Image (tube, rainbow, N blue to C red; front, side, top):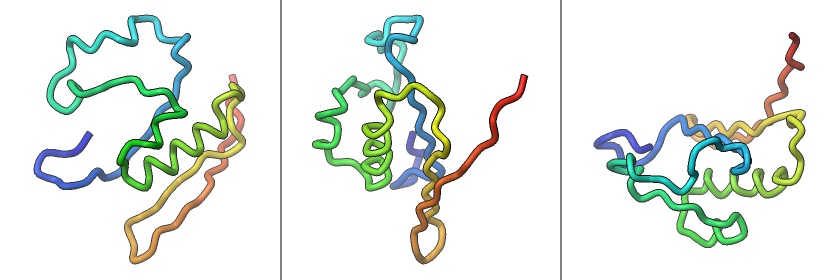
Length: 98
């Protein structure tokens, strides 16, 4: 979501879930308002044809590369763009323990 009065997003986070794992109707946008009222599902194969910010393009490329692998990734992408130059990193987590 874009903060009110700001021309661009900051600290964007992207979450990915398999549509088969959604308990409610994924096509029900009746309660959406403002910016969320324009939501639509787009096949991944068509998504990159839309005019999107560069970081969204990067995320979609990552999603396409991981779409068939349901295992947790060894690392996740992190794009730092708050200095004079942009930096693309991979963050490595630790295994979850019970």
